[in-house]
Structure formats: structure tokens, C-alpha cells
Length: 137
Image (tube, rainbow, N blue to C red; front, side):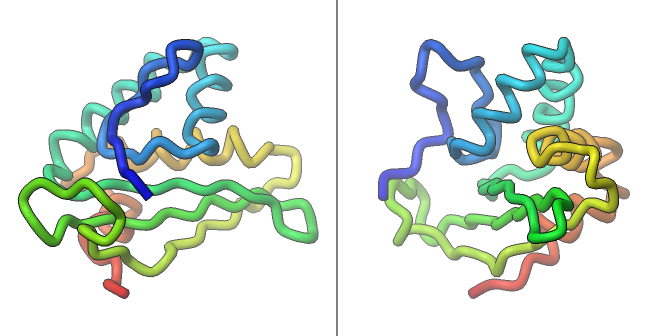
């Protein structure tokens, strides 16, 4: 699998950051543009960019059997200087967050988690769990 930090799709909003281009991330970016929240999402992305220099973040979204939204984050940390393929990264175990409100969609929940991760990244528990303390393998 080829890993690119840049979104190459012209019909989607540009959201490169330290996030890998996943369908879940594209949906979050499209939802934020549609609802007028992209500026807040982009500001959170910038904060994460400045704090997580080498790591890449993979986002997946789902809904559990009871209807609660789930956000699944994985951290990709490069093994070598110019990583290109998935094998060039050390991948952390998935960090799973389950929402407590059934009325929130998985896309909105993912948006909230990214924005939450972007607040005060140096003192942020969510950022620490995903980027700093993610267990390898």
C-alpha cells in the first residue's frame, strides 16, 4: 500500500496534515465543509502538525451494534527517513474511542475527536494517547 499524506482528489477538500488519506477522513472533511466547520477542523490539524512532526495518523469510523459512534486511531511512525510504503512504518495498536450519544453520527464524532485532539496539544490527554503513548505493534 502506498501512503501519501496529501489528498490528491480535486473534488475533496484539501486536508493533508499528519493524517493518512482514508475514506473516513474524507467524509469528516466533506461533512465539516458542508456544515461550515472546516475552519475549526483545519486549525486543529495545524496544531497537530506542529506537535507531531514524524508521526502519521490513520482514522477509521464505525458504529457499534448498539448504535454508538466509534473512532479508531492508529499511529504510523517511520522506520526510515523517507518512508513511502506501509512496510516503512511502525504501526501502533488501534486506539478506540466509543461515543456516549447515539444521536451523533460516526462522521461528526470523528470530527469532534480530531478537534479535541487539536486543543492544547502539549497538555491534551487524547493527543498523548494517540501520538505519544501509542503502543507499538
